Amino acid sequence: MIKPKILVTRRWPEPCEARLQTLFDVSLNIDNHPLTLAELRDALHDFDAVLPTVSDKLPAEVFQDGTLRCRILGNFGVGFNHIDIEAARQRGIVITNTPDVLTESTADIAMMLMLMAARRASEGERLLRAGQWTGWHPTQLLGTQVTGKTLGLIGFGRIAQAMATKAHFGFGMPIVFYTPRPAGPELLERFQARQLDTIEAVMREADFVALHCPGSVANYHLIKAEHLAQMKPGGILINTARGDVIDNQALIAALRERRIAAAGLDVYEGEPKLDPGFLDLDSAVLLPHLGSATTETRVAMGMKVIDNVETFFKGLPPPNRVV
Image 1 (cartoon, rainbow, N blue to C red):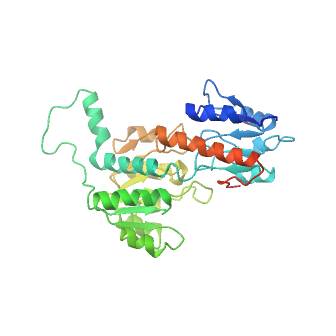
Image 2: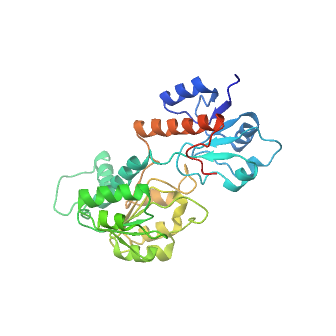
Image 3: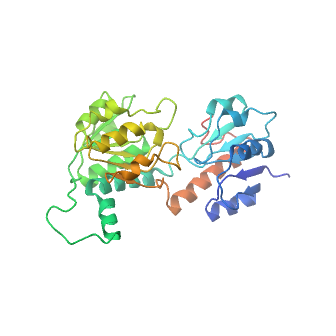
């Protein structure tokens, strides 16, 4: 029996690559370089399945030329806004993703960013590394307390609920949130949470605002200058969702002018590049997209991709099909 020919666009954890090689005719990206548009276009012609991730941009143009061999994109990640979904759909390509398995690790990073921004941890470490610390004194690097403060969530899916669990039960934080659909009463009761009618209402009431909305065309620059203007002067914004959910220039201006206290960011519009304006701001805590970066999570993500692709080539509906 001829095995499906599979391209893995970036290196995966060893257990995942080993399993792939038992199931498929696999080509690995040995030097782990980011694939160009031309390489991705060729892959759609040369392979039965391509397994991309967030660093692989798949705009409409890569789907347009000739007859495509690729029948499925097994995306390594939950978000798929790096893929032109409609272009793939028109070419009959199935797309799957990896929900559930990265919920806790991403919520952990959101909590870490919140704590780091509140307690000015990055500034403190830079002070030490630069050899500029002169010893403890009563007004050194004063931050803000987290325990008991109000956490506002934009979006209330799995990751937001995981963060709410850690924040409410671990730090005694009241929870408010916005999502366009009514939340079930069991969720409201579990967290003693309140669903507010608008993003602006969350911004006004919360001390910390964490973004947990999906990356999509509809959510592009969802958070604009007018939303940031509603935040408390001591407010802190956290983003582990997608970088383009925020208008970066508006956020940089709000931080530079000290209209909000700080931001903790794990994702960026146009990453791996980020707006250099963030680099000049001590009030910006910056991480290189570490949300799912635990060994356990990345192995689980890879295994879920394999489950989807294996099921598809058996002629069955893949469990995590999004297109």
